Image 1 (cartoon, rainbow, N blue to C red):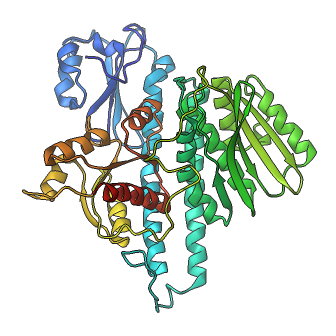
Image 2 (image 1 turned 90 degrees about the horizontal axis):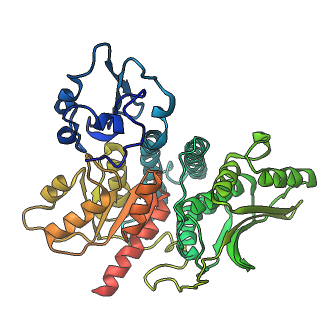
Length: 483
């Protein structure tokens, strides 16, 4: 059996490499590991280190086995000996991609917990009841306008930190050659919808009006990477726009589709605009990194990788337009968005949308995030059943359970389990088709594509509380319409 994370470096000079997660479960290995004695029987996803000990008993004299701890938990086990080189390509390829993804995922977990806890605290400041109706709060601390300002500032800081984590990890993966486009023909509307759900609360927190115009055109691109380009636009716009309005929309230009982000604000001076255009036109990404911020650096690199063109226009005192030109799909097909999907301009129900009395099952193996999700959903009036695995969830639902109204699951769970399988297994055990929502701090493109193809809505950690509330309200609303 070959791991999904196996990478094509031979038995020769790089030695065997095995990757274990924070639970000491095997998650990936290279081809050199497959050449070890008894590897065909022992190399199994989720295997424990002690079960793999026989692999290393027949190593030639002078070969060593070394464990390298990972900062987010887990470790890498490597063999080395004559002809083996520590580092080099063995540290690259798909394995390095997995290590970057794992580190990024682990950094997002405390950020996700902090964002959710801030949402719960905001509910206390609002004096919100479970039904979303405001109640008068007479506590001096809760009525303090300065406390509200501090809370908003903390939320903005969390979102800014999230953007930096996303951007730095994606940029490292890009520059290391670990980003491999998967070109398809996605409908732009789905990409715009995800951008709207993610960005609307962030713009609202800055007092900016944010609109997204629907577009049903299909394009030839990698949907995940195009979404990251637009997220880079959003991050840059948030950084440079103090007031006014931001609009995301599309227009046809010959065989291409222009996806444009317009913002009001101070705009760029002529020399700044010229320098930015020159950066956009560089074929190799060389140049002065201080000319553009992290979001646009990432957008430039991804656009070059996809062969898309970036454009910018700006007028001092009036605002800035950022655009990416993407080829339209060969068949030129337009497709109306599915009736069950919200339009991208609809970033979600109003903050007061009623999600109370809903019975929500949460599956999350990080204790901090699990506790924070429970606190936030409880603040909204939901009855929460919290568990760190499918088995624990079934146990806590009881011997003759009523199906929950909604299942929210982390994408990456313990061992080989993931959130998609978890939701389906819960539904099968309860003989019910359950609405589900996937949360993830993962940036691995393969995992993200799998999640999007599952049919379950996907939100990225750290998720803005109002984006989560909007997604929960939509899913609950659909189920209530069916019944």
